[in-house]
Image (cartoon, rainbow, N blue to C red; front, side, top):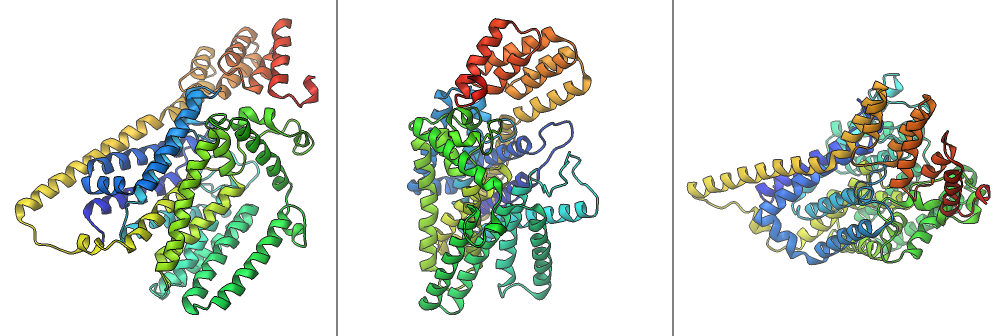
Length: 563
């Protein structure tokens, strides 16, 4: 039974919103069909959740009662806000994030709001309802994969590598998500409460998921699958034998295998030929650059989603050899280091506090749940899957939302088991007709407030989608004035301005191309590619060319080409 109607409504909103955030891809009239649309849905979800919780007294009271989580979340959001206000990047850049990632302040603020709201869900039914969003998002990706294997492309985007993209636009993210989904299915298939028909359906989904992970050719998908299944087997052993000796031996076995896999990822040990990929070596350089950004800017970081404009300045000399002088990255490929680079120690510490709370409640849950509690098993194993992915990869919105949702659900669900008043909440009581009418009226008002919040959140998050749509329309029109106007539209993005400049230069309109190149370096003085564009733009003056070369040297001090 749901704890109350407010919790039920919140759980339904989170389930539908998280599902839509994961699967949303808009290819019509957009150059970037994945992350900006996902940010739009995420913003609408967070807005609806925020308004609804603020309106409902019972939920709001629960929120302010649990101060460790609330204060950690506030510290995280405040540190991110301070970072964008004092970084070299523009406030708009820090707020919406870089094009193609969109993991700026707005995305993280929304994720923090969603984590807090998930921690308010106290009943098993509420938690399971939200987990249904994860399940059906996985089913949607399975269906999409089947169609793509049959030669039917449901999403009309460019996929020259013919890779498995799922609803994430990237095979690595698709592989990692399907690994999380597969672990969820495994946890349910071994539960005795599921009938034979459901178990057959889950078995089919598991087999297709395994094949999809293989076809994604993503190491992280395999690693995340292995880690999740290892955790799941731990719970099974623990529930059926409850022997410290068996658990100890199993833990030692997993530790040995984990050590060999880790060594293999770094091209060492007997598994290196199976696991090692050059991209894993590249990650070492990306990690080092992220660490240097945080160490050199310990209080404020370099700004939210600003890793890309700092990478050349902070990379090690060895990065010029591998991955190469002209190979860059706009992320550290490690969520912790990305956060450290973005906001320094305050942002990292607040994030670690949030993760620490989750770990504490997992430990507490291990003490409380001696038997196989399906909900707790799913929450813990899938969260550990996300944690593993976050250490070796990127915070893509469609994937990241589940890390934050699972964090909140773990905290809320485990806390509810020690709540002596939980029975009082769910116990039916006789209520007069007058009070029923008042309660229904309040519920109606709360739902309307939720709708207002959804539209408000969507309105704040929609500018990147609108600007991209206008830019796409301008490109199709091939009208110079429209292209110039769309390239300068708010929120201003360096990529659009540079593309507009290049379009004009190649279309024999050199004056406009040069003007746009100058505009790019004026608005984005720390963007290496903007200066490189100006340097190579026709009709540029010798003085501007010399200035551009000096700026490129400043922004890429180790590159011998500019010395």
